[in-house]
Image (tube, rainbow, N blue to C red; front, top):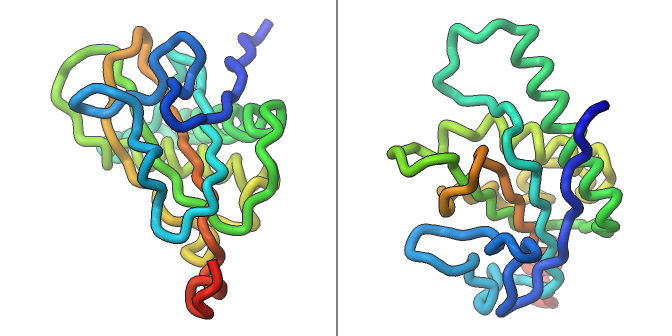
Length: 173
């Protein structure tokens, strides 16, 4: 039997995003700062916590076999989409995504190297109908960060709804 991912939780300002697990931690401690939403924010925020221990893609894996990349991409994409659907994340016209990687240990890491993993998760959100597309008109980010240590390592996506590009140009937010 395949292990089912943990459920998505809704982020509430001032509370941990992932029930009882400390939420999405960023260096310096504490949860991501939701008290100051991104520019043009409408205030609705959702957090998708992928299960710990999932195999990830790294931009430095240049000699990785195509079949492995395809398998890992499909698992990340399907997992993020499934969590968004079961967590009832509504369709958003535009969103900012804070992508947090909670590593399994304290070694030094470059969060940008995990872009292929975050990209697969965002594609899963598009597949689930959370975002119409992952282009610049519908998505700000991902803003990639390294979080606190989590046994097995995991990815966390913090989505915040922002005003559509046409609304910010017109001045209505």
